[in-house]
Length: 262
Ligand SMILES: C[S@@+](CC[C@H](N)C(=O)[O-])C[C@H]1O[C@@H](n2cnc3c(N)ncnc32)[C@H](O)[C@@H]1O
Image 1 (cartoon, rainbow, N blue to C red):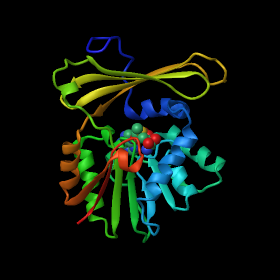
Image 2: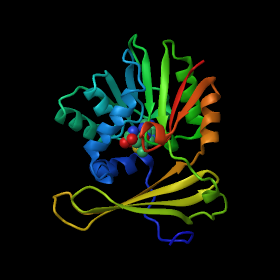
Image 3: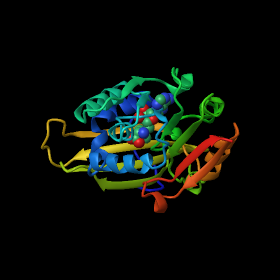
Image 4: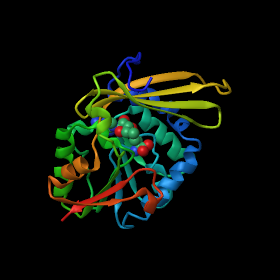
């Protein structure tokens, strides 16, 4: 299938994609809670204990909930209403407080009342769902934020060569892995769209119909591939200084960037 045309699932806008994925999100990982705790441990070591966490694309709370468990005050935002509902349920199940609400970053940073110094999060490749224009606007606001702040993000390392030669709709990447313990097979596919745009497709197939939510899903939406140089250039545009931390050093599954006002 790789490098060939294949029948794609219908394209969803990003909110619909993540709304549909929200009840399934935990099945993307063999052990979601263990993975979230590992991510919480890595991030805790990078965040000043005096800082309040503002998770800008929190999803179902992969980072927000474990950071609240580790004693941080956390405000969480996400485009997806259903992801926010999952996040609230996870926080309640872990007996922690996370102030969570739906917010579209295309409208800019959420209103952030308060005097705290902030650690903004854009973890788990969330920047890939924002255009250069939207991302530049957000970064400018973070660079201007009146109290000391830091942006901590993580992103995929894209091999731009994968997209460069491909015709629109070509499947340029496919990877299948076992998901959570109830017999899920998770497949990620990317389809070239031209330039740095691509479609990401997630297929979750349950071989064991052991739970009431077991079934099949296949969802597709569009995203932006940026390699490290491109991401660094965007972060530096409003004058942020950028430091990259490698997976081999942090134990995190993606490279992490720390961006702060100079
Ligand atoms: C790959 S997920 C990462 C979520 C979470 N940080 C994690 O690592 O599990 C990307 C998230 O970005 C959110 N997102 C995409 N576009 C957004 C926007 N315009 N405003 C706010 N959130 C957005 C999606 O809803 C999704 O939850």
